[in-house]
Image (cartoon, rainbow, N blue to C red; front, side, top):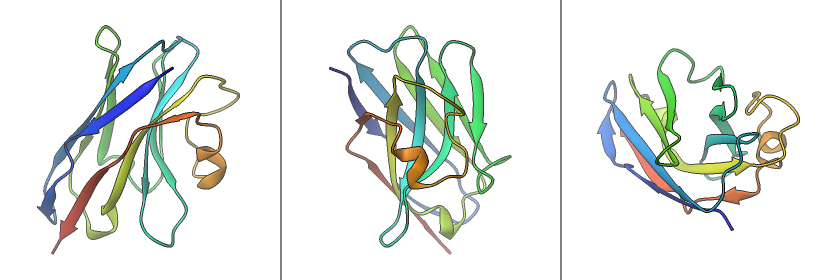
Amino acid sequence: QVQLVESGGDSVQVGGSLRLSCRASGYIRNKSCMAWFRQTPGKEREGVAGIYILTDAIYYSDSVKDRFTISDDKAEQALYLQMNDLRPEDSGTYYCAHNPHVTGPCVSNAGDRDAADYVHWGQGTQVTVSS
């Protein structure tokens, strides 16, 4: 059973940066996506960045492209999200997630439809961006 534990959430001011980390335990097959999702109350869960482990193909949502960078450390089974130029709309709970049955892009601006493909989820880490 895969377990995911996120860390790194914090409160920052607009324009600031944060780095989120996710540690995975259990078996992560190469033909998997690992991704970061975020959610705010009343909104769909949004896939902001994902990586296909086998090829290192990377996907970003339009809302974070050019500001966020996803990376992984396969040896450590760790996933990271470097977030720069943070905005108030980036606030939310950020989740690390694992999809072991990949059929398309890891994230694709499809909200809950992206999230439905993911089987394992962390408990979330809170990011608050204030002006």
